Length: 212
Image (cartoon, rainbow, N blue to C red; front, side, top):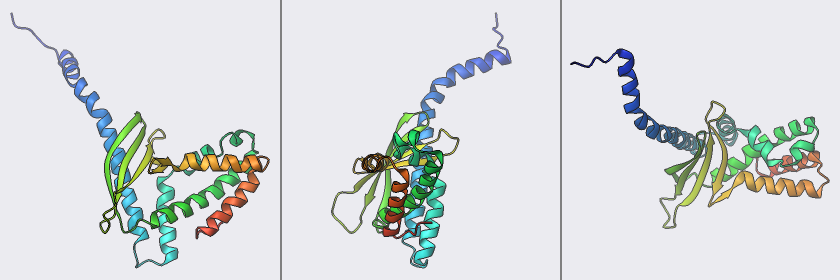
């Protein structure tokens, strides 16, 4: 007796056979997306900062445009406010996010400007959840015998867009460090977010980015 397999049955059998393969490939494919995102875009930023054909203003503006397209500044800013996000007036929170954007642009540019002569190498990634990844990289100085610097990038995809939400240098996460500093500052200033805004604007100026 010859067994007959209907199209529906064949589709079900094919799905059953391929499911383990697809499940195994899913996280790897997602991780590759996060790694590619970091590899391509951090190199773009470093290329802008080391382009001597651009004026200082052009480098600053181009780097800021790239950065704000990659980084979820609002998410990070709200996180760094800690518990004061819930108690501050909404208008103060929005004003803080504007000042934080300027501060982040200045601080990231200042930070990465130190490494324009180095190369970035993605060495792996860790998937914390289906939409949350840590991409491990090394900054390698071709003119130095020192060990490469370890830089990790936290990438999220839960909004439907791949974005950068944190950076760690030698294991120290920038957003966590900023939250600790901001919360301590607000604790010393009666939770006055306007005082923190003025402080961030001053820091942005000192880092070479005029506050707007």
